Image (cartoon, rainbow, N blue to C red; front, side):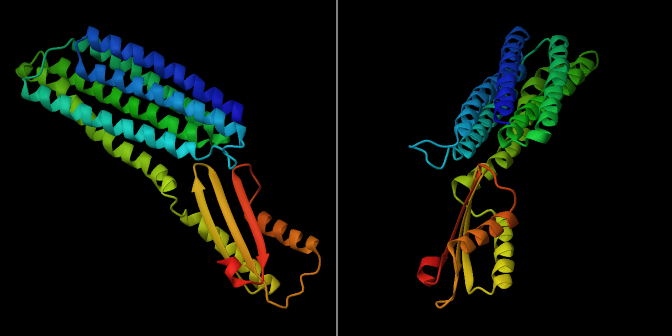
Amino acid sequence: MASLEQRLLKQSTLMMALVAVCGIFFGLFAASQSILFDGIFSVVATLIKILMLITARLIARESSRRFQFGYWHLEPIAMLVEGGFLLLIAVYAMSSGILGLLSGGHAIDFGLASLYAALFTLIDFGYYAYLRRRNRRLNSPLVRFDTLSWMTDGILSLGLLCAFVCAWILADTGYRALTPYLDPLILVVISLIIAPTALRASMPAIRDLLQMVPGSLDQQVRETMQAFVARHGLAGFTSYVQRSGRARFIEIHVLLAENAEIGTIARLDGWREEIASALGEAAPERWLTISFTSEPRWAE
């Protein structure tokens, strides 16, 4: 699975780099700020994909002496970096678009621009569909987040196509004077699309970095332990959960009565296995610690 994840991210990086080169070339050739912006977006997306590829390779190592809990914490960092860059690009697009509108806009080759937008709309959405299909079985958070950049770029290209076709039509009507304003107007619209997308994509990473408790995991652990304690007639429990990227850290302290007879260590190991099985299938990204004590202070 790790090798497939890395292969998909590497292919995506190379593909986005090609899109970036084409976007910058077409933007300069057609004198279109919006196409040039699309190319710059692709350049940033390529750099982020390189970061994600490095992160995936580190995660595959699982742990080291310096990072003994693994490299899972790099996932939300990589996602937050991408979200931050998307927000910066949205600010750039908004400012460039407004300045272009105030300066009276500029003429571009809408025929060539429309050809570019049509071609890359197909490429972007096609690759988005390909990655999403390959990730159904893999279920990689990094690949899932990677598809977001392709979807966003596809939406940008589709928006460009619609606007350029409209400009091409207006060029033969009495509204020809409005066509110079369409390119900067596209930039403003694009910024309004990117900003909310970047914020939504960044929120899970922000929650992970702030070590906010994932509600669904906390509820699952509590329900499992409530049933376990009731089934075995134990005094109680405390639990703590945390998420970092795809990693789940679960710490459980089971409180026994002071005079409880636990029998052998094998019985405690059996209880641990029972709890672990009830919480789902074991995986490298799940760190589970279970202790037993009759001292309430050790269960706090």
